[in-house]
Length: 106
Image (cartoon, rainbow, N blue to C red; front, side, top):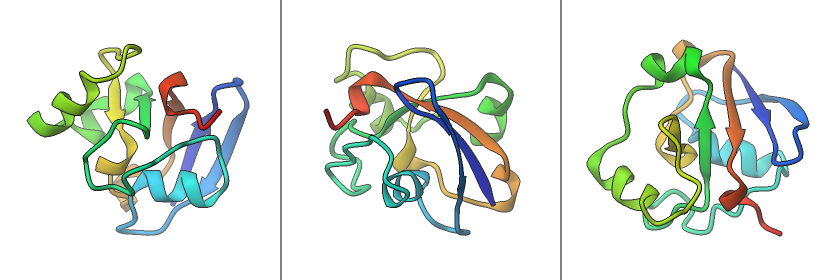
């Protein structure tokens, strides 16, 4: 499956993801600028991203725990998600998202 990621500099990357992997893992393993400090344990918001509007219904709403983590960053928008909470699947082939400034390593 493909994930289209726009980084914090506005550069677009087409990444190959694997079924069942967390979107955060794909982004991290391709070497993009994402902290992903907790490794997907839902204990930080360092994989914060903005889901493209066309994909919001397909990705679904964040859980209450995810919303609590998102409240810890200052650049939250209505389309904010933690990429560690989005699992790769055929239904998400072509998913478009943008990495939030708060997710940057530098």
